[in-house]
Length: 441
Image (cartoon, rainbow, N blue to C red; front, side, top):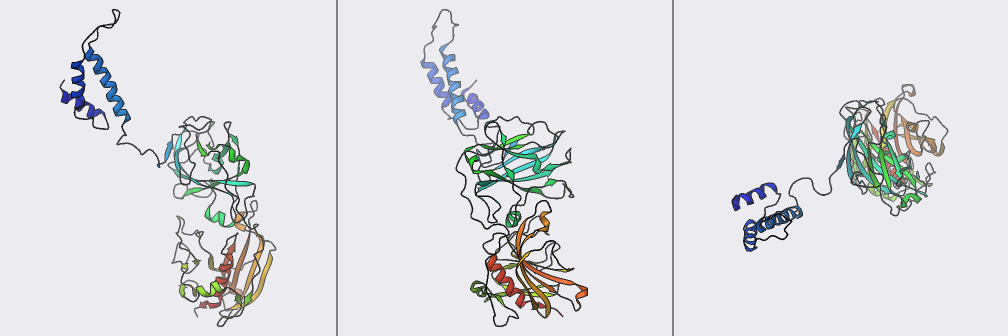
């Protein structure tokens, strides 16, 4: 075999090119070493062969020590854990780490018969609480986003939030309750549901957040997320979520449903009723913009610095108003969390299923129509359901926009309070929007 053939073989087997003079150097070394027998009981091995063997080991060491130029990068890409992979109780290479913000891991979704889809985990933050006061100061939250993609129907069909358990320590003791999010937390971090419910799992987005509320003492523990879906006898996968380190500081928050700070109403030129005294809101309306809802027949004047909507899903144009840019999610009928003011017109009247604590309750005339201005707190959010009532405050205008009240087309414009720092400004902006609204004939 020629020197060039040896070199070509090495090149074909390695991910790096060996030095062109490597084989020649080895050959020179072989010729310089005398052949000898070291022991009468040892086989006679020519020195050339011994040096050649050493050279092979050397070449292998050189090749192993080189960085590969193919395959996945050493970090930054999702880790995939095959369904059914056994995992050790302590963190190990078979326990993918999803520790820092935006870390990702992928596992095959499993059921009693095998795999039926893919699950992607994305790490959120460790947070000391939320502005809506839903987390006690003695606790903190571990956030994980979960997304399923179905390739067939699982058996049993139920999957989602019950599949996941947060555990602590080497013995994997279950820890942490799932947070029933309130107000803005629910809008920013919608909870992972239990599927299928009333949806088609192949045409709908199957995603949501697991918000585990854990005591601050758990900051000294290793926390892992165990995936054991219905129909399986053992965990399918385990993910390392947190190593011992200090928990985040508590978040100062208003008590959910607390009465907002009182405000002062003032008269202003050009407005048919008093509005909340707010120099910041007045400054915003110095540069106004307008939009029209062609279905409801109204035109809104709002701050040019704010954003409104074009027709989206079932929402007509000029229904949403936001102080910041927003993206429409997969469901075009879902109100993005950045929206501060929502206006709807429906052929119905509005009432309450409880007796709220009203801080503002007065009649107003809006563009010639009878209406009311109301702020209330302490009434459960009906979308929270009877088992998970969520308390919030609402500042709203309700206007009967019909010649005869019996026809009951009703406009409602409202903004919500859930510990949001901009609630006071949103109320003042809503006052001015309603004072300037115009209706078609």
